[in-house]
Length: 282
Image 1 (cartoon, rainbow, N blue to C red):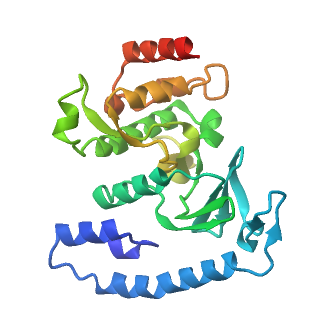
Image 2: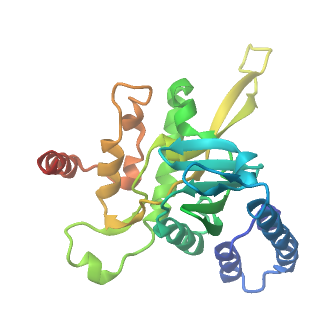
């Protein structure tokens, strides 16, 4: 697939195309985006400005586009609503603007990293609506218990590649000089619920002596989502936060065995100190 056959192209991706080939002809993609973007803006304006908005218990109105969508994720007063096949809206009473800044930074500096892209923000009453591109696939959390060891190892290898990409970005030298560890871009919430995957069925040729082809499911990491906790942190922080969120008695109990250690490192001492601090500070 050529770069121009993608559904959406961000400014960061366009910049990368031109940087890699200053003679690249991007007229086709610009024409396509010039047609698609105004249509998207009009659709969102109609949906969010609909006169059929409902009044909620706290006095806020709920746009009709939300009522017609599918709830993909809910935690307390935060929702992620699917709006068609290519867009979602994150609804929250308080939305950290760092979420937007983080994804925009990554889209600009690491355009090949598969992440959702911010399309716009709207405030209505107490609520904030963040419109984003929809990550394809399903959450790794939902399929993890059914995966084979081979599939889980494949996920680990793909995550190693993606998190190595993150760490190609260098921090300000002045920050690194005052720490014992390197300062690196950190997701901060590396959990299967924030990893989107696709399961693709492939036919493998029959082995010698076999007549029937066998089907095998290949798992692909399609996106890493929820960058609200991301930032520049000491290199051990990704490991510490990822391990601290693991439920060793639930369906994700073996997730700890398949974390991308080659990329994020292994820091048991720092993890132990962090747990002690949590206990002391309550």
